[in-house]
Image (cartoon, rainbow, N blue to C red; front, side, top):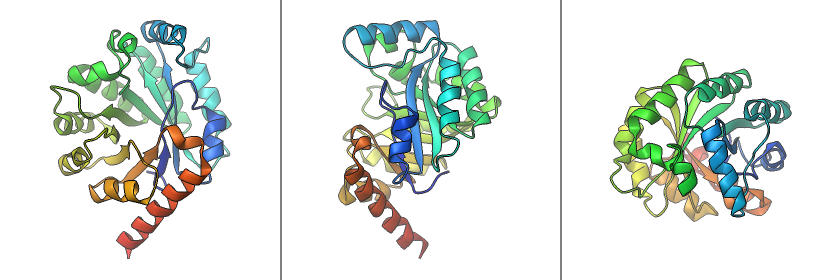
Length: 247
């Protein structure tokens, strides 16, 4: 899917093409965004901005995605774009753009902000697996490589079973914010054959090895993704792990 097996995880309103370029020396993939695609999620994003959260709110979100991915065309990193939508049409459009750039379209079933969940996007999709599966199906039909970003520790959600369902619908990548439930990575790895990225607290060799030993195929770095010294440690630990596995 990408190499080295370190990804930069999206930070809403901060993760753009320049951010991805800055981390490209240490990472094999960068998930830009997240970005709200339709009026429902854009309205929610504006409410988030009003209480001092950062969000991308371009006039045309699809054009913005296209432009950002084009800027990365000469950068040796595989891009992805984390997207949020309450409706299907923008998912289809953004997937077509991602396909053109060989980018991963990452469906956001992760954002837990109340305003976003109220639209039916973000973490609320974990409680509505049929809607999440339909978003994956539409993106997959558009020809894009499809990923899903989700989180553990959501009450009432059987995450391994949900991951099985979305991979059956065409998701090739599962990106898991493991919170304090690293063992769920092993459960998902046993349930699906998707490319599994583990996220949350990845800072050093110990945190990298914990996730890889649980069956992750890659790790991702979130908040410290702009700190080269951390990215360098994470890449070194990841490279060493997979070198030993190959041997």
